[in-house]
Image 1: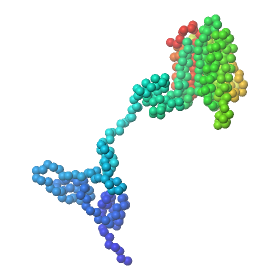
Image 2 (image 1 turned 90 degrees about the horizontal axis):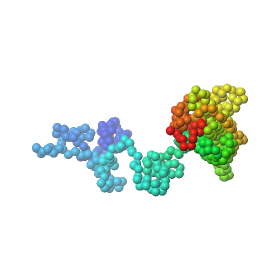
Image 3 (image 1 turned 180 degrees about the vertical axis):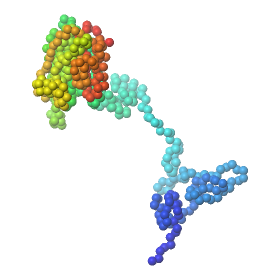
Length: 439
C-alpha cells in the first residue's frame, strides 16, 4: 500500500516552540498543524549581536546595516505591538485614558497593592447626622457606619460588642462588675445594686446577682428581669420599714413572678419550639445596714463574708441548691468528691415557670467586725470556691474600694480561664454613712 509523502517535521513547533518528535503531524501542546509550512515572521523580537540577530527559534539572520556613524539602534519589536482583534476580526479599541495592552488586557500602570487596607476614615457628616438624630451607636471598627438593630454595622458589616458583654456600676458605697467571660458568646448574668435608708435614717445597701440557666431559653432575659424586679422590690420595701429579711423574701418572690411572666408566650411561638424550657435563672442577694447583714438566694449563686481583719476567718453565707450540695447534706459524698463529679453543678432550685416549687432561702447575721460581702455567680466562685480562697483573691482594702475590688475578682476569674460569665458585687459592712463612695 502506497503512502503519501510526508514532510519532515521541524524540531520545534513553529507556533509555540515546544519540542517535537519525529513523525508528529500536530503539536501536542497547542495543536498546530505541522504540515503547513509557516511564512517567516518579520516581527520576531531581535537583539543585535555583532551584525547578526538571534531569532526566536535560535537561527541567526543578517541585520540590515545602519548608515555609517549612525547612533540609531536596530528596531526592536515587542509582542504587545501587535494589535488585538475581537471575534469578528475588528481591531480592539483601547479604553480612553488607559494604559492597557490591547493584546493581553493587562494593565501596566496599576499601582502596587498595599500590604494592609486601612479602615475607612470617619465621615463627619454621618457623625453629625447621628448626633442630630440622638443616636449614639457608631461602628467600633470603621467609626462611620450606623449599627442596625441586630448589632451589625451597616457600612462594614462588623459585629458590635453587646452592651452586656462588660458592665460596671457604682451606687454609693456598693459596686458590681459583670463580664461575658472568655468562652461564652453572650453574657447571661445580670445584677442590680442600690442604696437607700430605713425609716430611722439608717443607711442600707442592696445587691442582687442573677445567673441565667443556659439550658433554658432566653436565659439572659430571665436574669435581667429577675435582678431588676428584686432590686426594685427591696428599694421600695426597706424605706417603708419592712424588716430586711422579710423584704429579701418578698424580693425573691417578685423576681420569680418576673421570670415566670417571660414564659407567657403566644401558642404559635411554642409550636415552633415545643421542646424549649421556660426562661430560668438563679438569684442571690444581700442587704447590709449598720448592724445587720441579710442574704437570700435560690440556686447556686453565692454570698461570702470576708472580714477586714484577715486574721479573722471568712465564711460562706449561702448553701447551694445543687446536686453536689444534696449529696454532701445526705452524707453520701464528701464535699471534695461531690464537687468533682460532673453532676455537681446540676441545680435543684431556680426561678422559672417550670421550677418544681419556689423555696426562697434567707439568713440574717450580725457580724461583730467590719468586712465586705461578696455576692457572685459560679463564674467567679469556680475559681475561688472556699471562703479562704475568696479571701485571698479579694484586695485587703475592699471595704474602701469596692469597685476596684470587684474588677480584681472578675480579673481573677478571667485569668483562671473565664469559662463562664462572671458577675460580682462587693458590699461593705457596716453600711457607711450616705455620701461615701468607692475610692
